[in-house]
Amino acid sequence: MYTNQEMIIVARMYYEMNLTQKEIAEKLRYSRPTVSRIIDAAFKAGIVDVKINYPLDSVIELEDEIKRKYNLENVFVIPVYIHNSHLIQNDVGKAAANYLYEICDNKSILGVSWGTTLNGVVPYLKPKVLPNMKIVQLNGGAAKSTFSTGSVALLEKFSKTFSSDQYLLPVPSIVDSSLIADAIMTDSSIEYALDLGRRSNIAVYGIGNVSHNSVLYKGGYFKEGAYDELIAKKAVGDICSRYFSVDGQIVDEELNRRTIGLKLEELRKKDFSIAIASGIEKAESVKGALKGGYANTIFIDEELAKKII
Image (cartoon, rainbow, N blue to C red; front, side, top):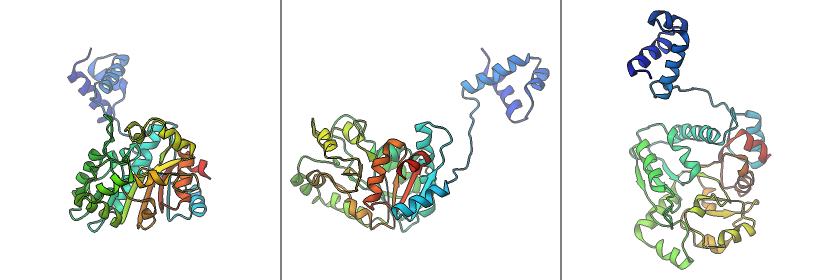
């Protein structure tokens, strides 16, 4: 309906010259409703791109209460401005990305898990040139079905952001037997990545809940009925593909032995063991993770924070 030239002229007069729609109409000899429609068309055509900058202030009282209740070093509760799960996850991810920018340095070894939560961090990572830092995948991410876990792409984005070397763990997260797991872990490249994960001083990971929407479930890691058995054993969440109860205890030792990656108890040794979660449906998962003492730092949204206390 309108040419690009018309839309650009009106948009620049309105947004850059701060003219009112009435003033623009008078200058261009358009009607005021026409100016309004041209501005709307400029939005839809992608000529105008609005970015809303707002502070991610923490909710201090909730943070203090969670610190005391779960004996944590750092708690970041992100305010909920709009009750939309996607926007909430973005805000939590943005806050976590800002924190990683602050704490990572050239001596760091950064261990990274994968999944929906970590994918919410990636868009907000800020470039920082740390060529001597190492970034390692904490748990196997090769899917057993056509469904992609996205683990490789995620690690590559972290590596590119920090101009650092990356170390993949190119194996399934869970295999069919503990004997297979033991054999895989004797491979020199796998053994090196696992050792690097153990030595990492920073670990960042999402807290997953037990749901048939889980990336692990969709990735084909569980045979028919096996996931329901896990639910029956009262599993409430997972970290790095290892499942725990609301009390923070591993719920299936045999499954745990078949899992390739960092062990949960090793998270307690990190300088920064950073858990990230959003959405009230993860309340039991977060409680279990914190009762297990696996995290010393957590990023959660305001609604979830209220739910866990």
